Amino acid sequence: MRVSFAEFRDDGAPEIPMILAISYPDLPAVEAALASPARTRAKAATEAVLARFFDGRIHHHVTTAHDHELTA
Image (cartoon, rainbow, N blue to C red; front, side, top):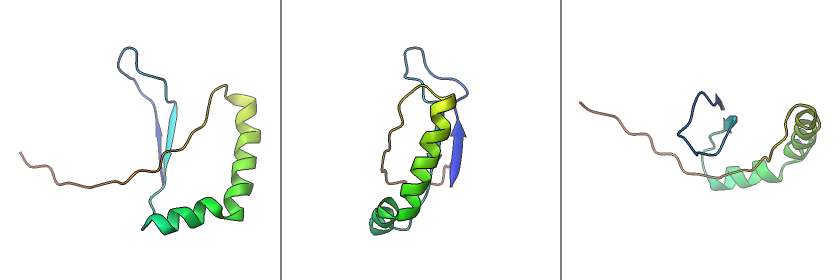
């Protein structure tokens, strides 16, 4: 799991204060995690806390990551 917090953004770019990224071995593992009772409980707990401190919208993106070695 990786948590990223916004430092700065381009003028006019939408504000994204935090990104929580979780890596899974494959799409079936993602689907199992999304359907799990633990996610349902965690989502409810998160929403209860964020409602007190956050006025915004939470949304999810499922992406595929590719690591590449950079050469000079």
